[in-house]
View (spheres, protein in one colour):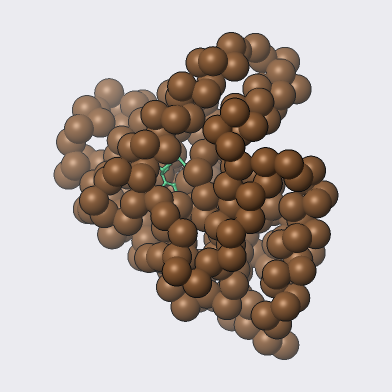
Length: 209
Ligand code: C5P
């Protein structure tokens, strides 16, 4: 059996997570949502009442992250996402998490990883790199439907403002900013259903196999 390593990046609420899960399922590969590792750092710091500006404490929290024990539920909160993008600017934090992410990526058979810097930093040698985008308005609309489907409510303007702020922080940071790798395949899903995005991604991947 051959090795297949798929790197998926993109901004908040671009649909990259859903796509990554579906591709992992389809190609029978393990999947790591690397956003959860940054969220886990932020969550631990909030729980312990630590300052999100303290890079050393954040690096300590990063060392304690266990990839096998990431609690999606506790990490889903909006406040955790925002805090995650604050601790994600620290090189000390990124170094620790990237090492864990690479260990996951290098398991025999391959893997699917999604995040912001997978194609550029974590797995520059990935077999396929996808960069998933959609307009901020479309992403905000999807996030709203997501929240509503779980019984919550929110204002689309607030979601849009949060998304734009987080993208800006993720794109402007010095260490591993959000950007497509030179050899990434760009997929704008603004006008695509999940199913259509899944088909388009498969066509790209099957084209390089
Ligand atoms: O993808 P998700 O929304 O869970 O990511 C939360 C935050 O974690 C992002 O806004 C980003 O700041 C950070 N992150 C990162 N690098 C990754 C994945 C996530 O900096 N590979």
